[in-house]
Image (tube, rainbow, N blue to C red):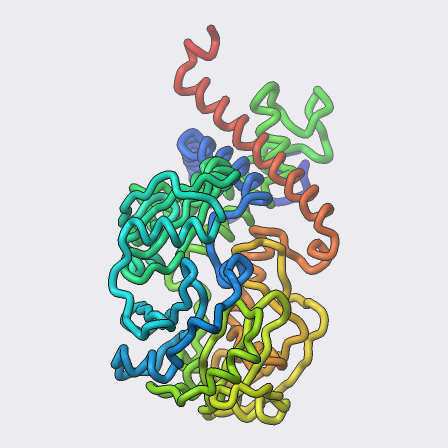
Amino acid sequence: MSRSEAIGVVWRGPSVPAALWKATKRWLYIFHRWTGIILCLFFAIWFLSGLVMLYVSFPSFRAAERVATAAPIDWRQVRVGPDRALAVLGEAGAPTEMRLGVTGGEPVYRIVMPDGRRALSARTGAEIRAVDAARAATIASTLTGAPALSVDPVDHDQWVVTRAYKAMAPFWRVRTADAASSDIYVSQQTGEVVQNTTAHERFWNWLGAVPHWIYFEALRVFQEPWRQTVLWTSGIGLLGALAGIWIGLLRARFRRRYKSGSVSPYRGWMKWHHVAGLVGGLFLVTWIASGWLSMSPWGGLRDKGRGDVASLYAGARPDYPATDLAALAQAGRGMREVRFGWLGGQPIITLWGRGRPRLIDGVTAQPMMLSRDRILTMARHAMPRAALTGVDLLEQPDRYWYSTGDPRDDDRPLPVLRLKFDDAAQSWLHIDPATGALLGQVGSGGRSYRWLFNALHSLDFPWLLRWPPLRHILVWILSGAGLIISISGVTIGWRRLFPARAGA
């Protein structure tokens, strides 16, 4: 009885010549051996760093943290309305974002235009064009509540290296004397705080996200070479892992065991590698494949929907009407950030503080209530030539609207409206019914990506998200199997490359 018959699977059909089958197996073994020798150390590092990332995320300074750490707006200093702020800047187009907050004790308008970011004092009406080291130190000290220890100019470093930061560079990196040993990154152009890191985050990220994503500054600053490095490394590793599973099945005996009683003919590290590969090989392949997919090979699973949905939904205009500042100060008492925008062509203001955001009228600063019919009208306007096919009010997380607790993920509030359209991308719009804010747009490609990357790579299946400890235990078990495969592969490769040292 052949090995393939022993496991109940016919691996070679009668039409395949024996010589060809023998040559195929030989090259299969060679390919797996050398990809393992080259890449198993990478895999071991990736599994260990992935476990670190389960508990420590890459540093970020997102909207939720920005609002949480901001001081309440001192409305006595706010003498310039949003209409004057936009007029001073003299931009022809509509801003994609306009907000008022406190920076270093001063109320400042921060305005994001398609061609860059600009800032303007709400006290004097003067545009902020440059921030010196002393001012940056004050901004950072106000944020952390501790004096500045050092202020260094940087164009980019390990923590502000991606394309998202390029438009905001250069920065002042301010180290403060707080207990966390924080580094605060302040834009030299506008004084905006764009990133903060702590000693804890910096240490663990060198063991977590940095090796896991191959995120070393010298490589990551070049977007496409970095992307190609990850693509080719994970792609070749995926083929090597698939070859390993095939070889493992060829060498395994599940019915008629070997004389030792084992399913594997090997001993020592080879046996560990074989058995762990049989047990955890499928997880290894899905993990590598999902990581490879995250680099968007051949364009990835990109949604083919409209790119102007957000602008059509808002109906923004280049100018902004005069706001009743006295009424705004009354409504915004205790608020930490005020965002000015448009909904369906109407000026609106969203107040952000400790609780849920509140919506008020952009002119009168009086409370606003949005009816569902009005939200549906705005959504239909944003999706011309597409029919609205479904309206769901989500009051609990589901398979596509959920939070993992990772601070890198934007908060996904509930309840939320999910509007479904029959356009080519089968788009879904998620809208906050309280503020009318468009929270997200996803098509069929994005929903597939949710399963092919998020679920397979992070194990954020709905039933596991309901039991976080169980999810962590499963990740540890599967990562342990992956580590055994990888470390045994490193050991086997070392002994093959240096047999004299291995036997010493």
